[in-house]
Image: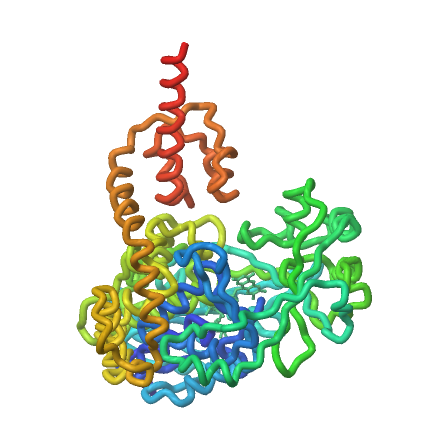
Length: 595
Ligand SMILES: Cc1cc2nc3c(=O)[nH]c(=O)nc-3n(C[C@H](O)[C@H](O)[C@H](O)COP(=O)(O)OP(=O)(O)OC[C@H]3O[C@@H](n4cnc5c(N)ncnc54)[C@H](O)[C@@H]3O)c2cc1C
């Protein structure tokens, strides 16, 4: 083999970029190979980062020395804390981004990173000897030697695009798929691959929109950055936020879609794979909820230098002429002109039951998988896995212990535990409801939870860590009421006294609840054989998600133990169910006594 690296990362999407930067920053000679260097960290769906539970993951990556948070702060055009009217445990930062700027900034990070080289090519095969990854083959026929490989191929493996009745090969629109690698993953690496699908929305020209018929959605007045290292005051001064807008589908829209379901690539039977039920196409929403007469459509800008806007909520696989009609039926979009049509994409993924919690495959040593290839969906889910796969590839080569995050310390730990222990039958995305310890793993305390890890990996500099240590000491002093000699904001920067006081306030607010939460978790273990009445009405439990209700009704479990093993049923669902059963039992007893 002509060239030799310590790590080769395949793919420069959100997973690949984090993996490559991490390995290079941990001192390993790294090569990232991608099909097109002009589409590094591209956002083919909504150019938004963060949101419910996802925002927490971005801050977790940042606290350990990853890149996504910092890039988002510098490419964001609108910042919001979602759920801000509810408790801090579910506050979730979200940013609408300038998609081109995001990609440019991430490319720059890769290009400027010591120890990291970039190559535009297609990896056609993996080379393994005696059950261990040792190289990759690229389209030119060249073989590249390496000690470890991280595969982050996203939606590109045998990607097929569906636009109504049209079907063609593509990894994303106008990008060719990776045609060969699937075969090598199956035949040379023993991995079983399956198919998933996802959809995206049409994009329209902002100049053709009548915004007077819509409701404005502004960013936060005092926006907060994602990265712990962004200096907030200077950042706020430079930030120019753009607005999003809200409109709705109506009965005409629903008729256009409902009358033409047969022509869409979405209904089951047309595309031979499964799609995420929580991110449904408009066709699926109308089929599934016929009683609903309208759905939200958020109009979201895609950048400072483009008139293209994204129609959040209008994912579709309808033919292009019907997409135009459907859009024009919506208030404010009567004269809207489509720039890009929505489409569905189908691709190969590898069942994550075939990987360990380090994200190394069980079949081939030193082969790591991260991102959409593991059946997840979303930029943040991808970046989280890319980061962990990169860290563990590097740690393995360096002969150090692996990094496995626990469920009670991070959303990233939950994501990896979920996918590697339960597998999935539809693309997996993160929600706060998947976290049984969400009172403790909040967006505000990601640094306190994870920065020690980032520093021990060598990804947080000593200088930054010293500041963090001072901040942590300040928190203790405020908590204990020793407030005479607190450091100045200048000493603490990029942390601040205001943040320290807020953190102590939140901690005190939740302390009691967290203790109860821990007790409940212990009690749950005793509930294994508790019976569930046959006629139990799951619909009456408001705090259950639609998915939870559907799964429980499908299986009708006889015991709590059985319920807890149903795919996608979370420990928090079981805790709620147990409380209801207990309540029902008490009510029955009370009625008997009254009789
Ligand atoms: C049409 C569409 C709709 C989507 N809708 C949603 C949505 O509604 N919600 C949501 O959360 N997410 C959505 N996504 C998914 C989101 O884009 C991904 O979750 C995320 O980008 C995955 O990141 P990744 O790094 O795993 O892969 P990607 O971002 O897909 O990056 C893969 C990278 O691998 C490279 N590559 C692939 N194969 C090879 C090879 N053999 N050799 C060299 N390079 C290779 C590609 O060039 C690319 O750089 C959608 C994606 C698409 C395409």
